[in-house]
Image (cartoon, rainbow, N blue to C red):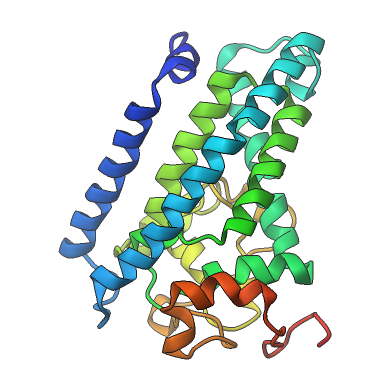
Length: 278
């Protein structure tokens, strides 16, 4: 346990890339063996779209990494942030740190993206995917990536998390993005109990149902506890699941990189049951 944070503090970018690619490969293999749905779609084209967004994300994160480093340096210099207010055993520091980073850097921004119209227009791109699989977790508009980078920075400043803890969190986050979007069948008696603490595949896929109220629920990234605490959970039987978003079900709109990039700047379309005005 003593070595875990120093390891993630010094692990090179190439190793993190290997983790990411290996995770994708693992879940692609599991999808082929025990798929949740047998979806009829062009997997190569679908993956191409989502991986294009991934490359854009990597560029933004590389440029924005200096923000994270600056936030860590500030917290260490001034001993600021919630985690620096009291001396904690390492195991408790890691648990509290991960859950707080998840609350501020992931749950909060995700919740806001479903509450603030202009933020929703960027996040909407993620919800347009009608065929959720392991690559879908990478489908984020560049504008949303910038928002999430800013909230990750806020999370670091608020918690005072060390660089090693931040890197550990981001590694676990990438794993959960692959796990929870992967088109894999998980037995309910396994998924349901775990979903009281962690974001499980079925728990998150409910969030990708094409209509409200399921779309506006289950915002967690790694931990589901924040959804339980703030009463933002919902569930749907997987046999009734339909992916996508009701305002953008046309194939030409959700399978074109050009159109997906332009969605935030197009006229807002009101979903059935939306809380937003026109």
